[in-house]
Length: 315
Image 1: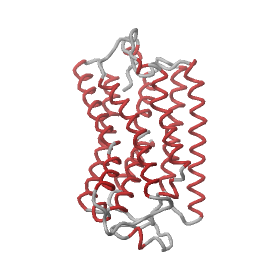
Image 2 (image 1 turned 120 degrees about the vertical axis):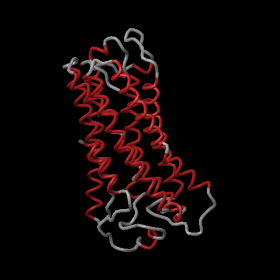
Image 3 (image 1 turned 90 degrees about the vertical axis):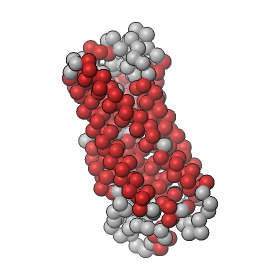
Image 4 (image 1 turned 180 degrees about the vertical axis):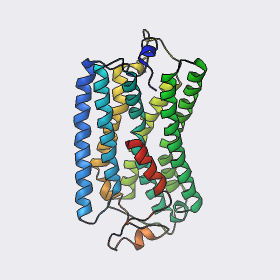
């Protein structure tokens, strides 16, 4: 989590305070990559929409890329004003919050696989209520992180700072658990006895869909695991930082890994592979509605929570 400039002079932080060299050139490269993926995903979304093929997750990845553009711009500006606490707070929050959109995308994709392989389990009301709890906790964790980061940087009270750190550790640990949910979906989909009501959706085999989701999830677990591990590690003086405090680690385990996940989802044309008919609300709908014209999307029980998270992470 971000620290105040005065604290950064004594305590090592991941990536440290950005400098014009090398941070601005590196950020410029990632800016170009994220801008390219933003344009690609929005183009795919609009072209699909014109054909009556509505796949909102492409627009979600566009939103994630735009959030990352904001993150990188903030880091570039911060490198020119290194002692600006407000920029440090904003940049740190965006680094940790933006990736939530990719985590949520993986859960939705794996959820569709589970619902196709085991419709009665995947559409179970208890499980659907569980998703609402998961998304609600994400909103709570995000709010806790933002509040604790701002408070810890505005106070000099050591007790309050320690409490804020505990809140941040709890939130970032939950995010690591949250990223593992898609693997639980895949395990249930393939380890449970085969269902007689198994359905199919989108293009491509179920094996290829599962491989895409599995790889994307593993990348996200690597990102979340790195953040969680560095957050839990004992503080070190800036004069003796650990390997994970380096700028290389910061850019590789954040932006480079995210680009890999974006490339995997975008270039595999997940908009075709994971498309399901609008209005699916229960077992059999993937098959029953597949041949019908697209209808306006209806709530499947957790759209409201999902929309709330999207608004918060893109602000």
